[in-house]
Length: 343
Image 1 (cartoon, helix red, strand yellow):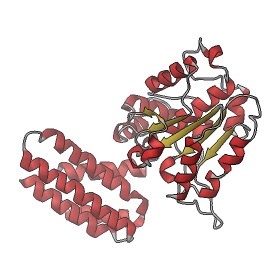
Image 2 (cartoon, one colour; image 1 turned 90 degrees about the vertical axis):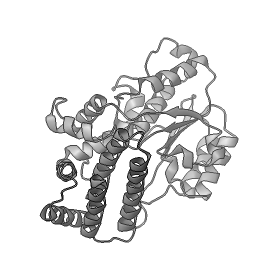
Image 3 (tube, helix red, strand yellow; image 1 turned 60 degrees about the horizontal axis):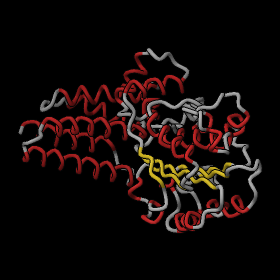
Image 4 (cartoon, helix red, strand yellow; image 1 turned 120 degrees about the horizontal axis):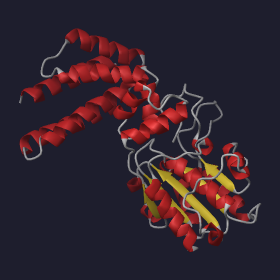
């Protein structure tokens, strides 16, 4: 689980600090079975939607193989979980294990987070894997996420390591969109595809991360709206994002009628807090997705809804890229939705 969209939630554990995994027992069992066989692929591609626990699983795998470097001795293990007080768990949590290297975006000279994992970072792999494992077992590299590798230099530098992997090396690549990675990278990895979490699992994961009651109605409502993403559930549980989704849902339920005053207020809110644009777009997409489910067999309406989806995505992208005002966007989208609802 990543930190999530809300950067103010600094008390939410990072994936390397998270020792509990929810909802991905099948993927965990698959890795464990392969590991116990002793024929372990050197690279794994952990793919799936953002925020569902891919990095959490990667660190869970890393901790296990670092703590249990001999697969034959792991034959009795039925889970990758380690005691939270285990020395390996504590060292990984503070990023101090000598046999684990994490490639992730870092702050640049200006202090702002870089948009990519640089080629210089990837080149550290040669030194890392060129030395003997500090504890005589595996050396593990986590790339979180492979989608953020600088292209093409970073991707090619990683590919070179994957083509000639050192002995006892393990690469764990996290990806939100595996299909966009270089085919040559994908072909050298064993795939672990994770599915979005069920609302119950998302609520448990979010409440655990937030230190909240698992029965907290706000957390349950956020998880139900998060479409299987723990990071989104955490962000929504903060309040403003969930409140915005409820406002958008109310306006959508009234279609084809529209309330100009409510749309003005919604546009003003999106202009004041520009980070809420994604929440608005996600809420509308969910509504459109529901229409697609109910319009199966009606090709005309399906085509119209698919066109609305594309226009929404394209317009939202333009608004964000060119930093345009949100209010005209809101009115345009609801105008199109109202027209479609009358058809």
